Image (tube, rainbow, N blue to C red; front, side):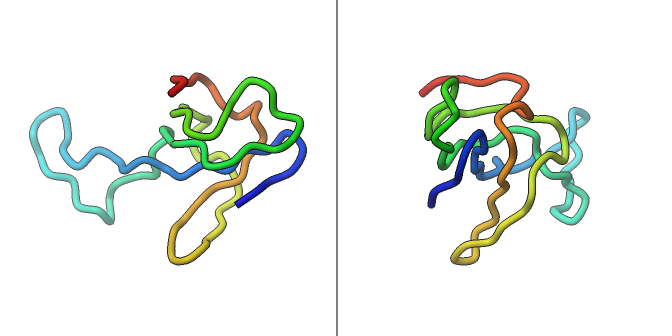
Length: 85
C-alpha cells in the first residue's frame, strides 16, 4: 500500500474495551481510537516512518478499505504525537 506527497496511511488501534469504572463497553459504543499504526508514508513525509505508533486528531482522515481491513489516509499534520518503533 502506498500514498503520495505529505499523506500517511494508518490502521486504527482498537478502542478501549472497558471503561475506567470497570464496565465493559460494547463494540457498537466504542469510538474510533485516535491511536493508530502507520502503514505507509508519502514521499514528502520526513518525520514519520511505517511502523510508528501515532496519536492523531480525533476523527481525522479519509476511510479506505482494502481486503476487509479499514485504514485512514490523512495529512501528516494531523498527527499530534508519536512513538518511533
